[in-house]
Image (tube, rainbow over all chains, first blue to last red; front, side, top):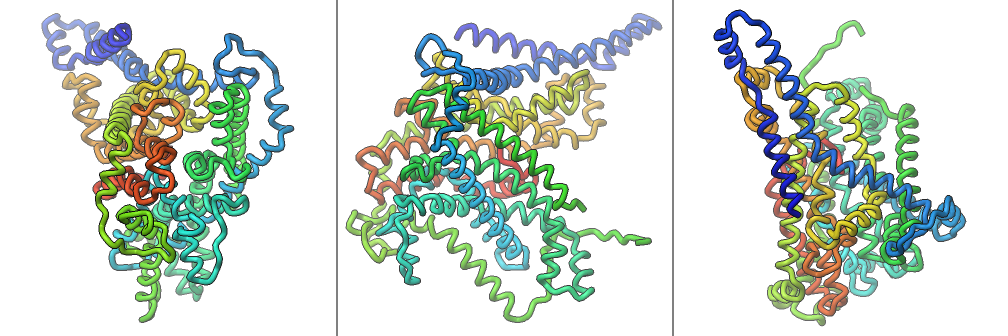
Length: 337
Length: 292
């Protein structure tokens, strides 16, 4: 602790001392006093370069240290762990080669987790994007209180998922919940949602769409405002109908926005944890067990550090590969103006 | 095309051919959609104000409680150490935000104003951090923190988030838009790098820094995953973890009116912050379009 405080003090002291420049006027004063001695100006220039380097080092070092330990060292440690069998406690980590991966790929449950994660991710990204675009088109028209509606629709996005999940457990309550009441009004008998193996995942997707649709809308609104009005007018003058304008002008011009949203939302959705942990705990019978929950369970409920690290590594590689594939495919359908 | 006429684009929403009925219909549609979005919030507040379980478990549901049972909030507040959770949430989210702003500004300054060999490679190392998701680092970081004996302390909740790649990137973008002349003039006058940062760069990049601060605070406030793993005792929990733990306890469970009151307590501060600063939130999200 003392060492920590001392190093912080030395660091701060260094920042104040090393980042000082000597002003040009001070230097000119030196030159004037010393007579026509050009070396003095060189000294000033070199001193500045040294100051720059010291400053760069001092400004970057806390962040580099933190990233070094908590990101890069951790990543390397994770890769090492994934080739071992370890329970967090024993003295030695047993090196077992690819056994964790072999076990993972031959485990039915792992493939169930892969399927669930993609079901959730594809379902919620597709729906959020479609509804987000529809809402953006709606709010892009001249309406009274546009700002108010925009804020309201965006507001679920800033709320705490853990707390909101509790609310949605209550909304999805099969007998007294809001959803089944509304469905009952239309004459549909609602399912048992979170306790049903078929409907638990759609329930999670519905909640996520409610949570993120405002975000997609705001991004799409920004995309729409960047489309020049001339293009719409030109198309209208050429006799294009509304659908044609939307399909052949608006949608292609929005493709960079769509691409951005697909990539980022997919990365986010593949890492879902909070709502699953609070609403279903991966159940009923693994129906909603997604990657992050599986990792959490393996590591911190069953204490299989090595296996959890291996699963996490597979997810990481999958996300990277998926992003690379999307960037590659995007050349076909994303048009930049 | 021989000539292109460049016309300034107004940010006004586009006007399509509208007939008499279209506008009212659109307004109606927007109102319905907004109502659907707001319905869960309304349901939460209505449930939280119901006096007893008989009124909570009723079919068809009643939208107006027989008495406004505001004391549910008192019961919820007292059924778990909420003052401790609130303090932890504010303290953790606040210190992470402060540290991220400091580190973000320092790094952004170096990456935008100081030239030295290898700088761009270093910047790539920073950006690559954005690609590494937290679940590949959570098990190793847990082990590192337990070796340092920092599990279940504020260190575990604050230090891994003290540096920010996202913030560095955002603030750097803003620093790059500051004209070089301003900073160079300050150098001639003998201002130190720290002084240039404080008196030139930061004041000129205030909107971006505020936006980043809000986003960062929001993410830390809402975080559940990290706090759940790194804390083991009640007095270190933040609001999201605390309220979920409360449901497992005796006061929660099926007492939905109490649970909903607690949920309102958790959500209200962050929602209020959003409404107060919504200009920065929405503008920030449109401009950056990123979530860390």
